[in-house]
Length: 262
Image (cartoon, rainbow, N blue to C red; front, side):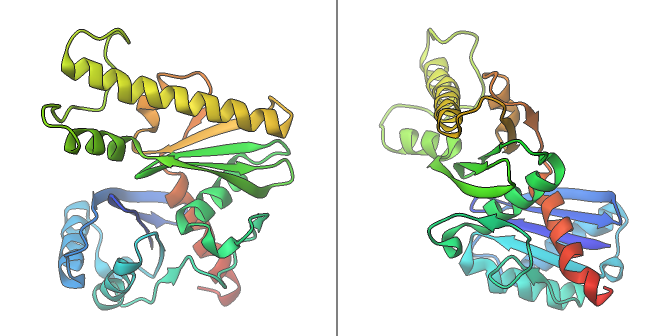
């Protein structure tokens, strides 16, 4: 079995694959104060509840955009699972061609998403990957399966948090679409602004990307925690794939370990 871990600013996502079968997946809140022992105990507790033993894990791979947790998670894997994890970092074989000004600046999660999207959906036409995470990122892959650039916009939850913390009377609300954009109370006013506002942002950016690509034949793939909510409010998203990153990590593990026979 292979353990895949995606360390994000808000959540850490785990998946265990047994060959092509997904044995389990779950997510926990990212906590910079937790030790490797605390993360390890948390991981083994979930394993135990799902019938997976630490000894079953024969390899691991980690994608992280939180450098301060890199050692913590890596040490946790080494101590509690007795394996040395692969990390999405320069030198790892990805097969991804990038036309970025500085490839080292591209986040690990974006690299994994691009590789996964090409493998799962690339077929000679451009692909846009929209990741609704702590930030809202747009990755553009051209018809030659090359990453040519993208957009980083504020995240949905972070924008709401900023609105609430920056005002004296606005309450914290659930991120869901209200019945009407013409809202009649404070809660639905805020929900309309967040959900419909971000739907408009997504539609406009995708429209601009298609214009620059000079084609409308583009597949738009959405992933991340708010992908399903946003997909209901716009018709520009073609595919929702919540497992895009974790599937990409599994593929990259196999790509880098196949020659070693692991």
